[in-house]
Length: 114
Image 1 (tube, rainbow, N blue to C red):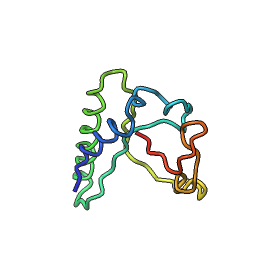
Image 2: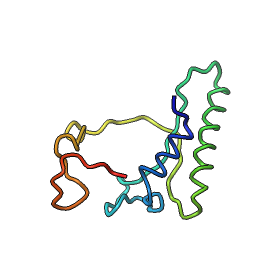
Image 3: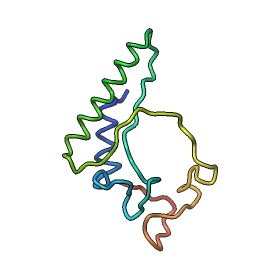
């Protein structure tokens, strides 16, 4: 079992790297489709709405504390998760299908970002 805090730290350090300071940008790609953030929700069964709201507040506070620890320049957003929409089929497993790497003329089949 991995804690929510561990996942947030991994996302901020290993996945986003310096991109956490770039609003609506990942590397050289810019636009709102490249925004990044920590989106949280409570998956465990709760007996009351109050308990669920309290758990979400705890997750949001953990994420906000970690994001804020990177200073005011960090623009990674922290919001409650909403409905998830999977990408179109041609975007699914994009790198495994030989999708383009972030580097020009890179012929590597799968590239690890981060």
